[in-house]
Length: 401
Image (cartoon, rainbow, N blue to C red):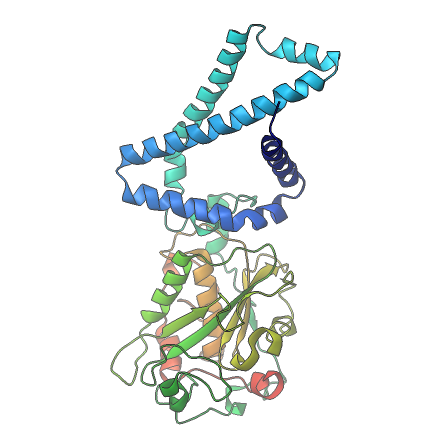
């Protein structure tokens, strides 16, 4: 007689398989945090353990899991068979050996084949856990494109027309923006705020430095999306810290601060699906609200992870401004940082630079419309704009804040 818990396990496994077959994208996104944790665990083990120990640990773990699932399915199946009709019993006897020893051998053979298959695939799995593979970036097993397709797409101008210059021209122009001051480092945060670690309206500015540029970013996630993992966050901070931008204290780089855990009641899930066309700048602003940012408006930049329907564009951001939306799709890349980190960096630069030499994109560098290893640097023209301080948006200041 099968225990109710065993029946529940079998029901959950069968239900999951059916749900994945019927709704692969949505179920895959719901499972993404757990899948990402498993991938991170495997990666940690592969980097921390000697290769023989790593292979043995995966083999033993797989064996224990396989035996557990096999026993549970066998007990539930045996109980169900006793209640089945004669035709089902005849079919069962036809596809399995007749003797108890034969049935045990049959089950053992299936288990061994599964274990051998799992170990045989380890080199492929380990090889796909590289720093910027599609798996390590997201654990997204719902995508239809392979790594070669992803790299081909990433090398093209996928970020053309991703800059939203909302307003009637003058309203969106940097000159219409009232820059707060005094602001020694030009990051649009008054020195008084940074010294106090809090704005006049109560928005926290942890680790702010009046003599070094600070960029505060709030990450929000729509339903069925993958939150940025720790590796992506570290890479994003590192990219900005290494930018060749001069600070009053003699250092270079920009300190990027990320909040997506809702420690102040903001950041994290937005409580709905996020789907935009990627053609209308107003779509970005629908998430840049008092409900989602509170006193952080016109202080924190917001990056919303959702879905962009407009072609193959992976991101869409205000230039200049405070809002961006990036597509949740992760891709393999030939660069040194994950694909989503490259896209977020690009969109945030649109926010804080606005225009460079009369255009929203540069020929090369982080602000070029292509994504790949050749563009992982800050162009001289973009660095010159940042040395003059972050651009501001009169449209945001006058209409959204």
